[in-house]
Image (cartoon, rainbow, N blue to C red; front, side):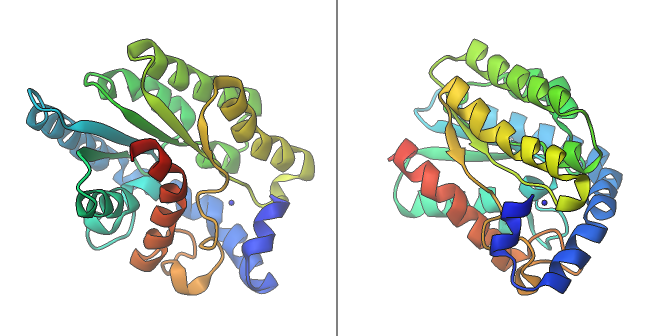
Length: 239
């Protein structure tokens, strides 16, 4: 998903295969996006209702197929559910909502952010941008859309803690494009004083045993590592 990504990849041949099919397969997630959009909205509304009149805090994971758990047998294998289990085991009073949608772009996220924010959100995890990069969308648009989502969350509740998940691109997108894409996330994090996950797929991307047959989406085991990457930043926020 930039040249720094290669440091965590194990084999050059695997990198090539991974990046060759990455744009095609991530875009294939769009075929399930309508169904996921309905399920995501229902899930959000149900959990919002369930947490009314309680002291339970809400963590909302807002992203694409990586968050939605594309290709997994059970959505409970996706990293948001893994985080929920860990939070529960520690006796922390948080409900984690999975608001991931396969094939989602930053523009798509920007268009649906308002109804997602119909509830109070204490921690907002923003995981979008990979599909923009793989489609060659102008990086200025990606940056503006991410900023608009951040602004919408802050406008709704200035006290919401926002965690931004960093992403990277394959070098075949061109060195200038990939370098600037990578820089979007730390720059936005610094500008807006956000918590930053440097690279969501650290130690997972390009590792065959941790990805599904498509070579892109993490397996259940890969999702556990993704959850660890999120937890490294999340832990200090919710404890």
